[in-house]
Structures are given as C-alpha cells and as structure tokens.
Length: 380
Length: 238
Image (cartoon, rainbow over all chains, first blue to last red; front, side, top):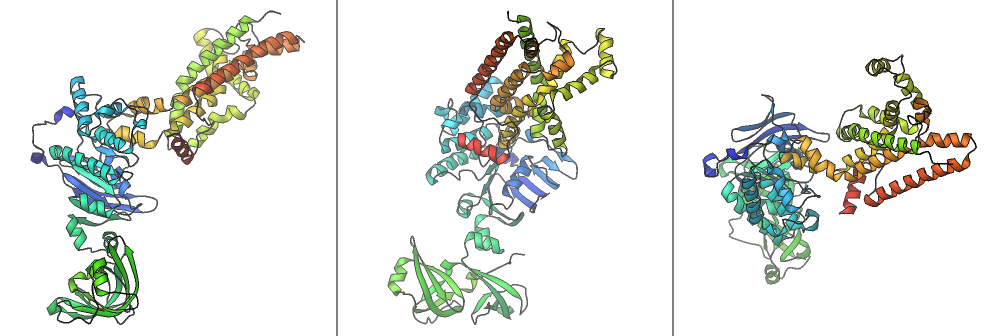
C-alpha cells in the first residue's frame, strides 16, 4: 500500500516539524560489523569514509532493504525500525527517497514515466501537476519523453533525483551520487537540490568518499570506517581536531608519528614527546596520559614553517634542524621532504621556495607550533 | 497419400493448450527460482530440470502410473468425469506440461534473475508492492526470456513422441499426434507419407524458432547465468 501523500500539508512551514533522522543500529555482515549511531537534521549530512567501510550498508538499513540485527531507525516521531518493539516498516511504506550509486533508473521507461512511478496513486490532476513542477525544478522538462538510456549522465542524475523527490519523501539518501560527473555539472545539480530542499527541509544523507566534497557541501559530517562511526559533527569540528588516526589521514595530515611521552608539564598544559627512535623531540598539547606512554602525533604539512637560518625570538616552541632531501612541485604547492631525524613532509608556496633559495641537501630549520601538533588515537 | 490433417490439428491444439498452461504454471515457478533464497532451492531446480535428462519413456511411465486407476489422482478423475485419465487428451496435456516444464521455466528464470536487483530495490523504495514491481519492472525487462520460454515449450510439445506414446497411445483424433503418425507410416514402410509430415513439422519448427530469435535478438541461456555474467551482458548492451 502506498502512503497517503495528502497527509502532508504544504502550508505548514518545514521548520515547525523539523524532523530529524536518527539511527542507532548494529548489523553483522560477513566481513565486519556495522555499528552506527548518528543523527541527521534537515540539510546535508555527509557520510564520509573509505570504500567498503559500510556506508552503503548503512543506507540500505535505513531504507529497509537490509534488516539491522538490532537497534532503531526513526525520522522525527515516525519509527521505521525498532528491534525492541518489533517494528519493521516495509520498504514500500517508509516513504524515503533513495538514489542508488548506479541510479537504478527504469531502463524501459521515459524520463517522465520514471518520475511518475512513485506517485501513481495520487489523483490525476495533482499527480500531473507535481510531475510537471518536479521536471521543471530539475530542468529536465524538455527530456520528459526521452528514454532514460538516451540522455546524458547529468540528466540521468537529475531524473533520479526528481523521481525520488516527487514522492515527497521523509528523507533523502544519496549513495555516492554525481561521482561520474564533472565539477561544473555536479555543482549545478547540487544547487538545484539545495534550492528544492530550502522549501522542503528534509534530512539528506549524502554518501561520499571524497573529503573535499564532504567538507565543502555538508552542514554535518559523519565519518565511518570499518563499520564504525569514528567522528561526527560540523565540518570545522571534524577537520580541526581529528581525534582518530583514520580521520587525520582522511582530512589530510601528511605527517603522522609514533611517539613516546617523556615529560609532562601539567602547569603549562603541554608535554614533551620523542618521535620514534630518533632524537627528535616535540612539545605538544597535554593529554591525560603518563610518561612512557605511546602516543601518535599528526601534523599538517602546511602547518610547518621553514627557516633558512637558525630562527630566534619565536613563540613557536618547536624548532628542529635538518636537511632537505628532495623538492617536488605539484600544481601550486611545493612539497619538501625534510630529514630531521624523522622524515617530515612540508608544503610551501613556489615564491617562498624562490625567496629562500631552497635546494636539496641544504640545512634548514622547521618551526612547529605546539597547537599544530594533534594527538590522535592510533587505530585499534 | 493424403496428409493426416486430423493429427496435425490435434498436435497444434495440444501445443497451444500446453503453452497456455505453462504460462500460468511456469512463470510463478521461475519467479520463485530466480528470487528465492531458500537453502534447498537447488532441489526444486533439479526436479524441474529432470525431464531434460530422463528418457521420455521413464517420465511417461511414471505419469501413466500416477494417473492410473490404482492411484488416488486417477481414482478422483474417474469419479469426477466417469472415465479414466490415461489415453485421453487431458492426459496428454498433463504429461506434456511436465515434460516441457524446464523449457519454459529456465529461460524465464534466467531472464528474471538478470534483472538488476537495484531496480527492484528502487521500485520498493518508491512505494511499489512486490506484485507491482513484478508487473511494471520484472515482466517488461524479461520479455525476451518469456517469449523464448513459450516458444521453446510450444516447439518442444510439437515434436514430442515418447511421453505421448506412453500415456496417450495412438487413438486417431484423440491422442494420435504428428510424431506418432510419422512413426506409424515408417512402420508401414510408407516413407512418402512419413516424409510429408516430417517435412511439415521440421519446416514449421524452424520458422517458429527463427521468428523467435529474430524478434528476440538477445542471448538467452538455458540456465540462469551467474550474476557477474549477467552484469557484463547488461553493460555490453548499454
């Protein structure tokens, strides 16, 4: 049975209900166990993580295509799944929008027939009006009569979005959409999606493996790896304080060192760590640990300064002397490999390279602020 | 020698009725085989495929026994219709349906299982019941396999001999099909008569199959392909 779409009164402002998608589930699979707990408010929630980490499984559990072993999935006050009270709403009654990675457009139908598919039970007048306005919102009116096999990738993506959204879903799930599209096409489609959602305000869960995409688009980022949520929050929260090694790697911390705590300066809020087996020592922010403990330190290549002479009078606490081993240019970034007892990757601009006249073999000093050193949890 | 129009008409009537029955019986069965995840499913698949390997006489023998006056089914039929089931047109239909079952089920199951599972998921997410998904997505996308299944079972029934002989005997106008008539002609050393009917049967079968392949220009497999193969085929098409 189809849900009654007329229940939703378009005059009610979306903010009045503000339905949040909340997920807290466990699903055991062959390779790993998905254990996810997350919330998605109206707007874009980016689900970020490496392939095979369980992102699609999570979407399938929300959509009802897979049944979680236990837990709860709800949107606002509507419970979709709850193992405790034995609720498991069938897929076709969940009223969700789900755009599959391969889109899953019905190949034997036209663009318009695809869009029509989910609202066949609406009264004819309302149905036709809604199809028309949805085709217009996603700029595919002129393609209505085309077979979906005869249109471009971007147009197929627009058709898939229109087909899902025309049903007025409670939430929209997007599985790595737009991956095959060029940047310009992609951002135009996302603009249209944002515009649509400005008026409808539903949670949109957007799966991606691209950190750039996640941090650029999302109001909220959820990182998932090996079936576990390892970080979630606003993009800047996740970006600036990676508490987990994988997170640090994903968001681009080029320098990652195993280190041992040698001194704790509680009253200064810092501690001294020795990097690996080298003589190299760094002052880093204090965490609750004890001397001798193993920690892991992550430093962005762009957060390291280079001095061609021994620097003086700096606030930065860490000055390491070493030699340039190699210089490589990638676009507008110059990447230096520096040996200070351990290998550091340092990024500078081409003009800095020229001004300092840096050449391989040259002795230099690295300057690193205490707060540029991030302590991350090593992977278990 | 004149053509035995009687036998020819009977043969076509039999093939048409068998096709109609198979469409009703084989489609749900194929659907179940394609989509069920029951662990003992392979037993059903093997049972359906049995007529492919068994000599028609073995099959015919057991169908005859099952329909005979000593079996419950045979007794029930006797009570309902006042005469025994063997050596009637109905008995030919039953035996032929069983004998042609794999020819209908396998292309259909193969086609059903080649439908991209994402499409079924997308259909369900869009609010469609299983029945609607089957009617709007699976059926149209499996049209080729269904046509193949129907045509194959039609052609197969036309050429049937052993099973018909076992359960139907050789009663003109009732159970004497073309293939049995041909056999009779040969037994009577009337090669001319045999040749006429054999040629007709061969020409007709060839035309039917050619038409099917022409209309339905797509690979069909006798047994559902492994999933990756199916993917590859679909990709190659798009």
